[in-house]
Image (cartoon, rainbow, N blue to C red; front, side, top):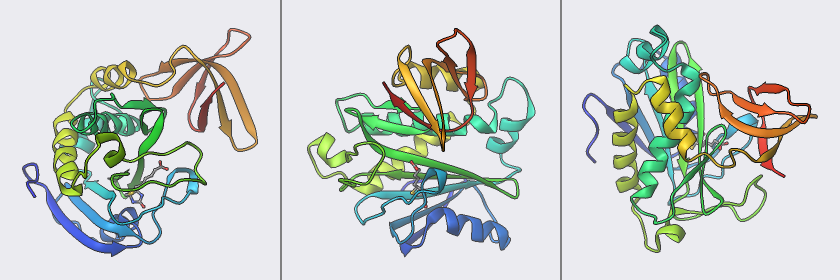
Length: 248
Ligand code: BTN
């Protein structure tokens, strides 16, 4: 498989979670070169956002990209106002996934805050970003050959169903890494506008669930940190940092 310049790859047949492996390698001082790509054909305990599981059967794509603190991504992400904030990495990643999937589907992928990618209104991909000792772990799952039928917050789909053919995991991964790498020097405005152009539900009424709490309002877009902006019924502007969004 062709990797972007300077990247290295570790491939597993099966592992608990590529994000957990990334964490172990970072904490064990074993990430000598980065970006480091860790991929697996299946995961035994794939991790989702908000402590959920990510069903990880063979035939789908599971990858974690580790970027070191000295790397241009992390550096650029932290230094000047013109460069993206670390909290924008999920949006940059979602748009890289969206462009990748567009190569295989005629239906344009849409982005659901904060980091889901939907095709035909169904979830096809999820992103889990973690920061460990200054390293950023970008964990990406893409449903290619199969998808969960029940037990998920959103209905799910997979790329083979959307593309109408059997897509190879490697061809998706190669393109994904290329699309991710080429966005790394994008500035905050590029990231926000690319994501917003294909964001799901802007201008619509949404409910954001935060455990017991819920906030309802009109989805206005995201701010420069990637936080969700809502206009509540009283006309107040509310900024939301986390939660599950649904349309009502
Ligand atoms: C979500 O939508 O909840 C995020 C799902 C992220 C899943 C990916 S699969 C590769 C990487 N390893 C994990 O354990 N999780 C991420």
